[in-house]
Amino acid sequence: MKQMKSPTEIGTGTESESISVETLREELQGIDDSPEPGTAVSETVSEVETSLFGAEQFSYDEDHIKSSLDELLVSLIALRDSDTHGKQLLDDLAEEFDTMLSPGTVYPRLHELCESGLLDQRELVKTKEYVLDDPEDTRSKVAAAARQHLALGMVFRAALEEGDFE
Image 1 (cartoon, helix red, strand yellow):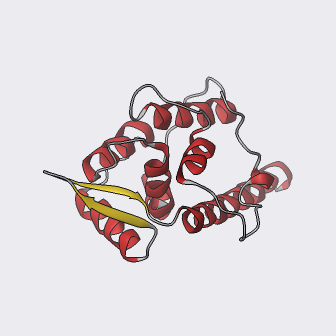
Image 2: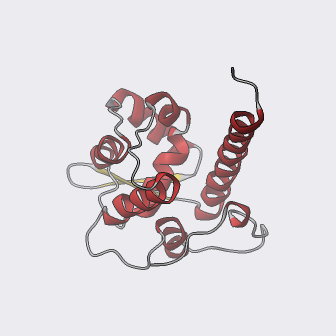
């Protein structure tokens, strides 16, 4: 399995560096090929949870998922080889993040991500598939969000270790 980048390595490339969709997918999913669509999503979430919490049970807070929904949706799309339609993304959110978001929450975000140029919507026979439209810009935005979350997490951790919560 490919080694995940450290927080300091995320998004440190220069703007002139180009990154292919395949490279972005491989970096985000942490493995080169996945035998089954969606496997990379499950493997990545499981690997992250295990590396942070070991065998301890962890569950995601729906409000935190909603506050990072744009970055999470483009990350899920980057991790998938196929089945990047709205229903599958809703299923991923439910299965991997214990979050039951309504289509009325997710689909408007997908449409806004298309309007912003991060995603492209492709019409299929009975559904719409979403793909990264601008992988470099998308990678930059996800990396910036990751740095923000990591920095806040480290502040919280320091406060828990050094603060007076008695």
